[in-house]
Length: 500
Image (cartoon, rainbow, N blue to C red; front, side, top):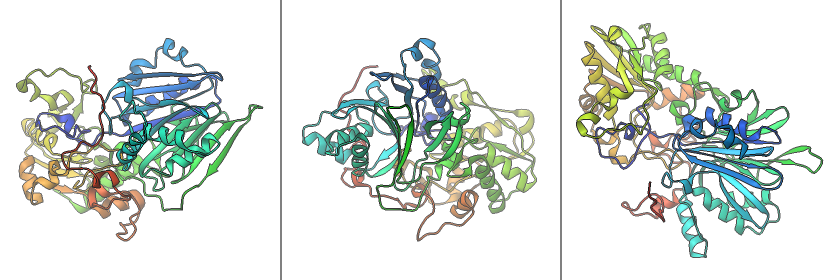
């Protein structure tokens, strides 16, 4: 896709502000002697879901150990000394992109608290649409909040529950929240996994040598040689517990009224790794079908199909196969430029797109190019990539987007710009968008084209099979916080601005 987004930016040169940011990733394992090292490997496989911070909590049978760091998993958790500080046969971890709360150490998950029932660590992927409302209520009742993360709200709810066991308190707490979550919690004897009743965010149950694992995606199981057991069902809570004799029991709870699963479509469009399987569907195969459907819906005479890397690549392969137009890597991505690259002046920052992408002139010059991207958010990256193609000698540049236009903000864990900053809302029609981007033509995949690529059937307007509100405005849950928030009020409470 164009790249994940800094929602507050008005800078046309801020290319990191021209994409949907990944959400977060969770991983946990129970009963394995290398629990922390395996958790670090699992988080490494989930790094695409969040690059701003990572954390691991372990339990050694006597006490909990925590390591939380800003930056990438590989920057911290490949050090044997760090892993040595995380002893024990149970561990859980989290990679984060800040959808709520600032990127500061106090917000890095897993969050830990000592409660009446003992210590508990929690991490989650997603966003609570009543998290602010609950936080304000808790603070009014005397709670002290140290972070600005939704996850801390759940810890407070667990602490206040009158239920006897930690798992019952956990169920009690998540019964009070709305929104999207794939959650992992760890106590002295238990590893708990849960998904929201709509199943918006993915979570899978795996097995390594008889030891249970929870992970956001199957690719985290693959990296450690674990076996995929099944998806955690929407609205399900799975409690894995080490018994006094060392046996591990696994109990499935379904405490909420049954609903149909509605996985977030952006997992297939952009967020999940191509080698993952989400809700029984290969992400790579779905993206290829998106490209094939796009070729059927929006054909064009051209000489070469070029993906905008890396997100557009599977769809571009599908487009090329369906259209018969040759596929070429006409744009080469530089994988070694991060968000911290120093760009001291606007004149230097104007080269921003070239820091990340370079035209493969030999495959572009003198040709009619079809550029395939997975999505367009604000369009500023598209403007620069089209110009790059023209500078490399392309005679025509046609943009085809393997998802529908984005009209609406997300409140379930995807950091999206405000609606007025989205390209689709800034122009009256497709022709105006095309002129802004500077392309010869522009087309987006239809919502039915996306649905059939992912699920095999057209969208059912009466009961949509997936979560698709960013395209349609059909939100699957109440938006309690949004309705109670003034337009200029921040999306989260920030209680303390920290230096650094």
